[in-house]
Image 1 (tube, rainbow, N blue to C red):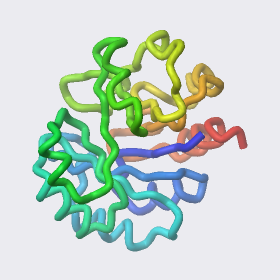
Image 2 (cartoon, rainbow, N blue to C red):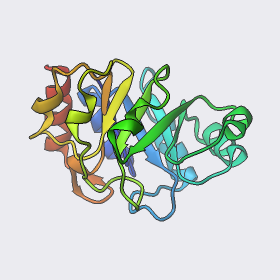
Image 3 (cartoon, helix red, strand yellow):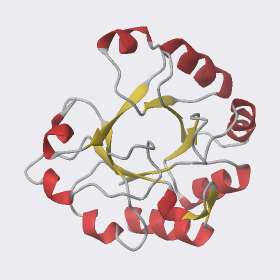
Amino acid sequence: MRVKICGITNYEDAKFAESCGADALGFVFYEKSPRYIEPKIAKEIIAGLPPFISKVALFVNETPEKIDEICEYIGADYAQIHFDANRDFYEKLKTKHIKVIRAKSREDIWKYPAEVRIIDAFVPEFGGSGKRVNLEWFECIDKSKIILAGGLNPENLDEILNLGFYGVDVSSGVEKEKGKKDFLKVEQFIKKAKQI
């Protein structure tokens, strides 16, 4: 199972997550988030990382042009689109991207079935709240293109390990405070997700 550690704000957390086997690191470019990181700092962190780990830039209510500009500047591999955007938006966006579905109901998780996408619990403040998606909604659905986010932590990860999700995305579940990771939780989460 692939693992993305999101809400990275410093090099120490990024390097530790990478050393534990994280497949991707997430950087939040939403200024209202307590995990917001300035592009200059993200660029410095990414420059110090080894190859073969994906760098993902998270955006909320931003223009395609601004997303492309920041992603190119920092060296991001993907843009995480954490808001509803129309077809015109995606046609203008040049950066590879991952769509986030902020699920309010079972019907929401059927969106974009042909794409790998992140499904997170709907919360007004756009993620990082620890709210969980109802697992019953995923019954009888192909989960091989779904990255599950929302309310995951080392203690409850067992519940989803054998359900067939492509990956998991965690932020608050491996923190000791907002914007700062708990190394033990990060290590436990990644080991459990990958059954190391």
